[in-house]
Length: 275
Image 1 (tube, helix red, strand yellow):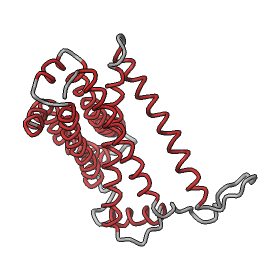
Image 2 (cartoon, rainbow, N blue to C red):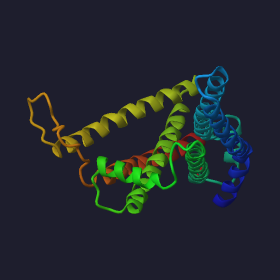
Image 3 (cartoon, helix red, strand yellow):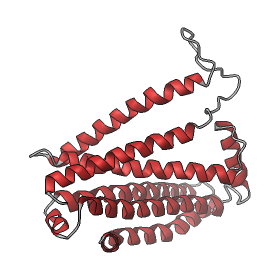
Image 4 (cartoon, rainbow, N blue to C red):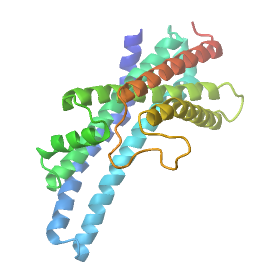
């Protein structure tokens, strides 16, 4: 049944995402070439300045709107199917709360990954078309960033894979935190949308406090921190993140994701009497 729900979810959400993806794929080369044309005319000229503003402003607006709309729709879709009249149809099916949450989470995660991939590709195409970067320079820049932040001796490929896995876990955890906020909002009799947003703010603040309590002592412990001194870090050398820092972040987000998932499914089970 989970597979059927995933297929249905892809069909329902694809009606929005596929046109969005096509729009970005079409507008990216158009805006990139428009900016190249503006550079050729000269940005100091009136026409060049107007074309440059339209191309850059339109491109930034497109990427931001595309990313935000993609993320928001995942939450709206979850809310509609578990907290509105559509929820009656959802829970009339021979499914349990795990099927509901997992189907939304899997499909939402796939769309988010595709959104990120297309956004990064669009920015890359814009930079390449306008000769702002060269294809061979990207790897070198990434190596410099990794060495500056982490000082890792691992290969760039291994490092990027590890970083990608941690970001993947963080993305799932973030989505589940919204699911939990929406489920908590349904425990109130009135103003459920507002209460869902309030619950998310509460969850976010609690997680930030927990993260600071866990992470800050580790960061300070890895530097020359002395209580009572104004400067906690030596700035003569760029500070490196402690070994296992990203693993800690990934583990923390994974643990939070499990908590969000269990809490969400339990609320759905009690609220809707699904088994």
